[in-house]
Length: 211
Image (spheres, rainbow, N blue to C red):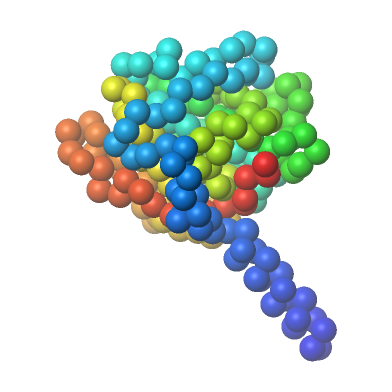
């Protein structure tokens, strides 16, 4: 009984360590992207072999999403279609851009080949503007990406205006999506209304990015 209890405790602690990022640690370096300032430009290769440059989307809203298809917190938002619904809003209704970024290093959880990435994309029935490889982790580190998912919004002027969690419920269970405050959607609503973003800098949750 004691052994079983200790296993449960250790599992709970492990999940808790995985679920939250220490935001202060992510922003210690002066190289990390700063809110209200121009978002660091980058060029990454997408899963079809094309180079995609962030600055080419100037004049459009851009959402950056760090992902790892094996992370339960990513699965939480993809299996019921929550992430796809936000993607469709950004791309179809906002005429915006959605860039999904994989920063998992080769040999680490979440690393995929181009063909594997295409299969995942097809399985979840979604199509971001581009799904990009950041195997070196350079772009992830430049933005201080700590978790999957970790979300960022860049405005039409190229400034970083939101960074943090997708919503305010850090559970990995899909049923907790309903009733949660979706920070990404709320930020988009604030932007469209011409208001300052109420929750512009939130604590991300999820699996650690596997640099």
